Picture 1: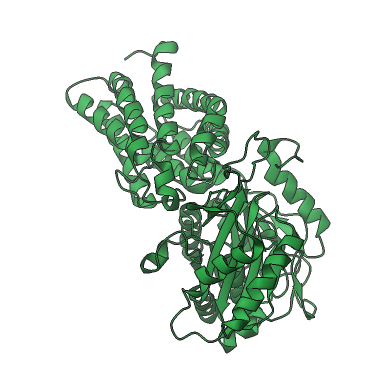
Picture 2: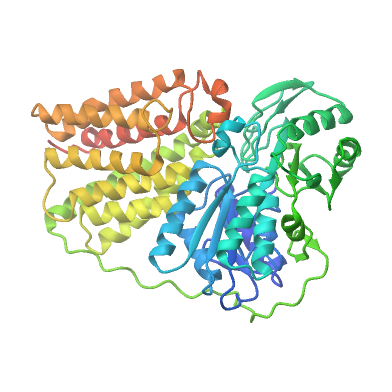
Length: 576
């Protein structure tokens, strides 16, 4: 288990401070992550990698010459926010454009996609690439749904080397896509990983068995198998990956036998003995193999086999020199750029808020009370939400809700202190929630609160129709951004019937507070009913069968949230 920490809530921040100090000759910190210590040469195409923490050496450990220009660092197993991704990209860009690349996880795709939109609006040539190497997470005809696991490393490596060779952005992106198309991975787990401060692992494996098809965010395997010998495991991995050889590929391959965090190097070498023999007997030439920990999952016990089929160009980049905190190969020429300062510029002053009247500021005070209550509720529910999420996901939903609500209440308080009205306070809360919680639910909650605030505005007291329409605007923002549908086993499955019930009651003449309170039971029942659904999107999708019987954590927290707000109507005597 993860034993060494101070406060589990600040594990990532504490880790990053230590990492930056220990590797100051390679990297410096910027808001959202780390970048190379040397400044970017003018006109150079750059590559920014990233995702949640817990995967070291990925992702911050591969920032340096011959590899990534920067890494966005999220909370453990949680996507960084769009603001953080954009911040790191801005720090490395010097006119040549930025390729942002992550594994194919809903939160990463959403947040990095939003970052690309922001960067493009600022005139930066930004692109995004999601890695899809995990053959266990979707069939070949749905390859776009596959997760990115240890194959992240081959794709990041080749795209980054192309950028350092002086390739323009179009070609850097092309190389990254080619590397992804040529990469396949299959992994197994012998035991689950434990989040800092947690008493139990995110999943367990029955004695004498292993899980085939793991995820790197603490997701268990998609099927259970008897524990094999090292040679039998090697056969299973080799046969599983080779069957997916891309059409027209050569017989020269880059290979990674990757440890997940708790499997000893000596054990990996025992497995590699058979892997190497099997590959050579099959007629393959193995080029610069890597055996060790490259993309981990905290302290998970397990390993994975990655193969990238090479052409001349990919082989050139796979074997190119690199010098980073965690990965070194060959001899790299000295950086031509000047060394960056380890300190970053202070943030600009707070934005001026739109004018608001006293009625709207009074409503904003109720928003503050609601956010205070939500933050307290999520602290008490963190373990429960994490447990539910860990059944088929990565177990971070409770922590994300705690961080999101805490950040939202502080940002809302600041906006209210600056005489912000209802819309401004909700927008500030939404922006902070998305930035600090990260992940899929963080950015969705942020978008929903912002849309609700935009509809309510900063003048007057919202009426019954206003509130109903604002809830619908929040729902619409969430669906358009997240791409999920009703029945996909997400937070939508609790929000949709709740919003519908409020609209129906308001249309019949009820006050919005009464309508809201009455609709809570609808949301709660809908959240419970998600136990019967199979997830169709997100990290839980590859483990759909395991998810049946357990409600969706996002739907549960949504029902908790609307119930918490309703309690204020009664407990604090807020009249209709």
